[in-house]
Structure formats: structure tokens, C-alpha cells
Image 1 (cartoon, rainbow, N blue to C red):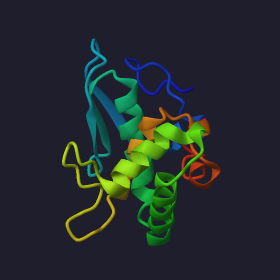
Image 2 (image 1 turned 90 degrees about the horizontal axis):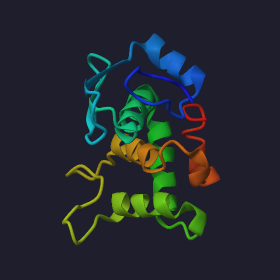
Image 3 (image 1 turned 45 degrees about the horizontal axis):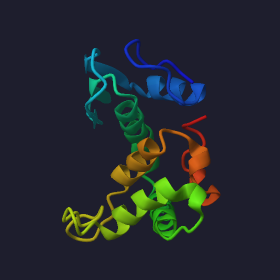
Length: 158
């Protein structure tokens, strides 16, 4: 567990990952440290993780965006990750139910809400949201992910 900001409880980020994120230039701003209900954003041009509140889930999500930003530049990494999300969407092992449910929605959408899945209009996978969504969906607990996709998170989370 690493303390990434004084207003946020320690997160299951690896010490080495946090050191790299800081070296890379990532900084965190918390707009309202007195609340834990709210999201945030990752701004790659300024390397800013902006959190509306001190919500741990949002912090994990946005730091996962920051971590994935450089990794996803390799088309083979994106392709492999997308294939594993597709595989996860069909997972039947109940230990990975939460992650499987998220992956299923990312791949197939959700009729009740009208969500079409995580794809651009041209069919391009929105891998950066899938990556961050799975990270925050399991709150950085990689044991909640099957081995075949866990490796994408192994260097980021304890």
C-alpha cells in the first residue's frame, strides 16, 4: 500500500510503480478532500490526475490511466489486452465474476442503459477505459482477475 496523496488513504499501488509515475511526472490534485463521492480525470498533456474528491476508486482508476498511457502506445500490447478483455467477458469461473461482468459490458454493451460497449464509432477498442475500468472495478486487487489478464496489472498493483 502506498500513500500517493495526503488526502487519499493508502492504495494497493506498488512502490516501484508509484516511483515511476512520479518520475514520469504524474501529479495528483484533489479538489474536495472532505468527500469520497466523485470521479476524476487523467490529463496526459499535463500528466495530471485530477480527483473531484478523495475517493479511492477514482484514484485507482485515474492512476491506472496514467500507468497505461505509455504501455498502450505499443499496438501489440493493446491488441493482446483487448483479446484478454474479450476472453474475460466469457469467463465462467465465479471467482472472477465482478471482472467478467465489467468485461461483458465493455464487449457487448448493455441494453437497459443503451450503452453500446467500449468501442469508437469505427470499431476501435477504447482500451484505455477498459484498462482503468477493470483496475478500479477490482480496486487494484489483482487476485480478482484471472491469470491471463492479471499480468497487465502485475507491475502496477500489489
